[in-house]
Length: 163
Image 1 (cartoon, rainbow, N blue to C red):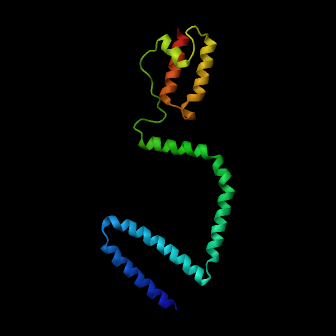
Image 2: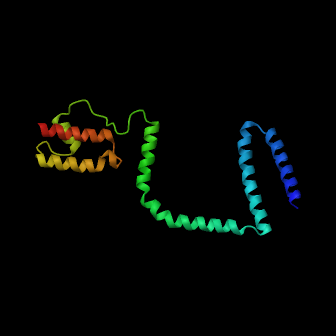
Image 3: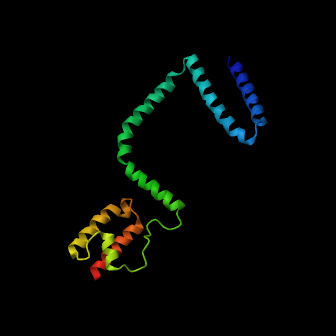
């Protein structure tokens, strides 16, 4: 019986190779993918008809149990995983370094600095510090904010506190 199965497998492989060689380069990828899916369905049906499907169902059940067990842990670490992926793509596709903040070169006037921080021109030192702290909590690069915006906020605070 095994010899018949091997003979059928060899005939099927030869037929697949002949059909594959007749396809154009653009059709080969789609043909290969479709053939792979058909092979999986055939194997599944053959195992089901022969009564050998029990190990596959048990493996799928175990996989579902593992996924459900570790899903809360994976979701808990999702923000850290997203930051790692973002840093990876940023370092891979960016021309400048991710930790290098863009520093504004021009000196800010008092009015421009007040506009950036959202304080009045007559604001006290403590008002400037509080406004700076609130803006930096929202726009810090470590929390997903822009490095350029954080540099402008810092420059505005320094500009106002020096004057």
